[in-house]
Length: 377
Image (tube, rainbow, N blue to C red; front, top):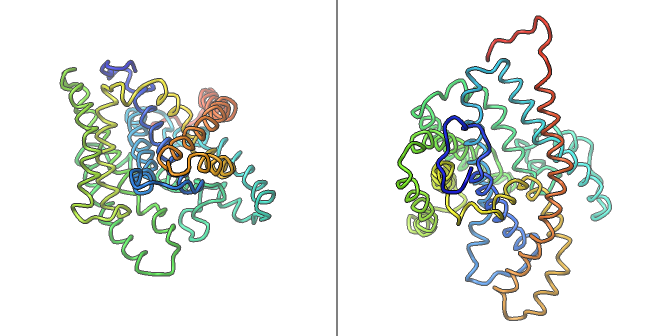
């Protein structure tokens, strides 16, 4: 999509630069969060939002996942032969090559770097994307891989969601229902006292409303894409203003940042940004840097935790040379991290992700066997 141009409904399944850009911003936020966390780079009070809010880059990912899957599959689900099977082929081809490469990497890294052997059961559980419901295994053996466990459950439920959610009202009912379930499950898990703290946060149930809001944002996109260009241009800036507004509103409302209601509110803002910017974007969001980072965001996401860990000696050197200038030190550490991660992510995309995607397309392009059932699902 060209910046400032409305999206044509006829090209509705094509790649949209703004979606890549928003994805890139989410990945960048998570890298900054882990430079603080894994890299242990001190944060001045002026950058406190890095600790409190940039971890919600994963919320952006979840919203975009639901939005994009509905956008690319809304027509397919009604017309494509063997839709469900083909949907899962596309997902496997997109996610598995890099994730399996990272599983192999982490089995070796855990042994060489930390002197730990990885149980075969954990490898199998991770490879099957089945780890999210199991406390203790919910983070996967791949650092930051917990989000793939959450996504996998969403993918498993999508055939039912595609069957039941056929109009905006259905999506809003789904969002309301998942928020109620998420709220009470969060309370029950928190009160139990027996579960790891990270399990409550990383549970699919905690994030289920975010996916539902992402689906709502798709139906919002269908409503706003035909608005006048001037109106869309104004909206593209207005929805961005909701980010600082909600940043200040959530503490004022007395809501805890990690609660399902807070995630739902943030996902509503991210969903609105996605819906509008998928129609008409602006330079602040969509530019060559953010689009590049979005195109390689999956690799950025999975590669960066280990790189941040290994860059700690460099971080300490920067902190020492900039003693007393914590803000500048953090910014430089973050920029150095992105300078290392970005080219490696590009190589990973070209030689692992892209071949997997192409393999899936070739598989789906094979002629159907004679006598096969070609009725749409």
